[in-house]
Length: 371
Image (cartoon, rainbow, N blue to C red; front, side, top):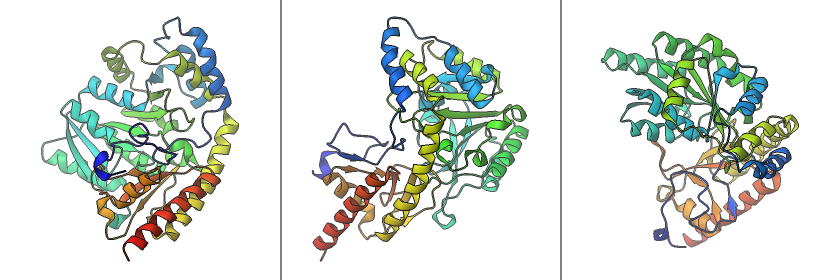
């Protein structure tokens, strides 16, 4: 496969433009969809002659019971990215604060309404860590310049680094943005993969912060990205009404709604998932480090690492892996990063072992060619 035959994609999961046998580019539960979810999707075929419930009543009630929130605090959508765009088109924010590198769809959505974006640059010297102080400082700088931000977008744990912000820092930011009249969009789509999700979440604090909007999704944790299902949690019902006013009524399909209800019954599945991810995180981190990569201490279901070889910025590793039908997530399109940075998902022990040996083979081949 020649380097000229394709370009590095903007997102992971591009299995359609080249033949891939091992896809480590998307951060999806390695267990695949739970049995109840698959059964619900099959059953949903009997209901497809009817329009889906535009209010997602059964799903909303299940989410409310699961997370101990009010039904009125929930808005479901066709995946997290869809909800992100809905929020932006509803609020038309003028000025956003975003730590970078991070999930690129925040900037894409904000760009669609021509919002100004001020980045909080995460540096290699600081391990790409997000700190509340750095964000607050940038907000005050912009306010003093006469450009007060009206929204903060924060991914926790961050994507692509897998590094989470502590609950204490999140509370600090929630209180600060509340006083500054700034919407705080907190993306918790990967929080459920953490060993102790509650230590990095504000789900229990919705009542204290009307400016807080938490974004969650079934996509990753329940291994169902093809179904597209996410939801907002917030006490700011005015914002939810604004979103409803700008979106089409049937935002969530019947299969997705039924799958979501079924997924919330899978407690044992989540426990097993966290065990596999915790073990795989150690296994894969040690393996990548032994191959000479610089691996960052992720707590999520994916690892962020840097190729330190001389030709790393030419995306040599990415292309060499493709020749082995192995897909990694190049981080070249993340602001502040280049083609030497990668993200790989954590899978089961045999799959992680396969990745290690494939990478070892790629590196040995490259070394032999350079002799």
